[in-house]
Amino acid sequence: MYDQAQRLRQLVVSEQSQSQQSQQSTTSTTRVMTITSGKGGVGKSNFSLNYALGLAAKGKKVVVLDADVGFANIDVLLGKHPRKTLADLIQKKVSIWEILEVGPYGIQYIAGGSGLQQLIHLQTEQLNHLIGQLSELQGYADYLIIDTGAGLNEGTLRFILSSDDVIVVSTPEPTAITDAYALIKLVTRHERRSNIQLVINRASTITEGKQTAEKIALVTQKFLETDLQILGYVLDDPSVSRAVKEQVPFLIRYPESPAARCIEQLVKKQIKETTAVTGNETGIRSFLSRFIRVFRE
Image (tube, rainbow, N blue to C red; front, side, top):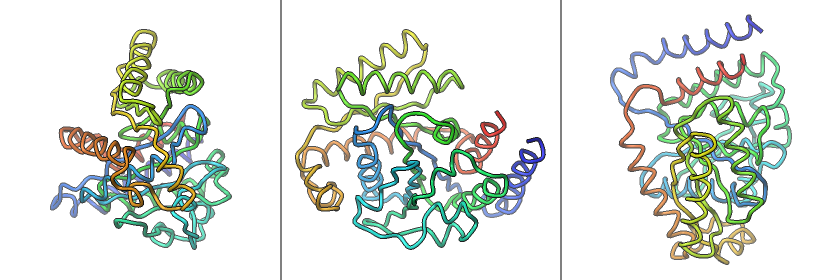
């Protein structure tokens, strides 16, 4: 385990050395954002895709990594058939540039593939290759959005604890609220986080969306002593299910729909808050450093 962790540290140090000169001439930083949920069926992946498109529509360069173990479906939502997937990269068959697919608004995405269970139990060489390839994205995009599976497993936890930001998606349903809180509780047990954002999806009204978010935030602060950042809500909208059936993101197919307008508001808030963030502990390099630390634990 020591040799493996040492090797991973060397990869990051090497990447730092190779990119030092280019970084001196640019302030570009890729912000790594993990989107997750306490349970399935809350519309997390659909939210991740349309949120990425919303950022791209505002002029941001976005890469989406589909890391939903067992249920990777970003490509399905887009109606696409990727040539290569993350599973191919993990098996060291290809490079990161060979698996990047182009989607609407210029977003790029990395499809998960059917072999993503390997993310839970990566071999040393596979992990080394994954770390090295992800480091290539430093400064390439404004946002790297990681769409994880629902619930919490070892692979998902690594991404959550390593990311600059974490967005937890829930719905107003009691089971979804309970599972979202349980996920936040497990995460905070491993590490106290100040960057957990909350989105309430499929809210029947604005009031329900706000009240549900405030309820979760209040309980989290009281019992976990953790302050959640309420990013906002997405209204329940029949246009969303129609778009899924048509395999076209609702932000594109129905840009004037209530759900699309909600996404636009969330994106504006995200960009404003990201711009206000200062410090050097963000970006692919910091993400990889934290990933290594979590792996050792």
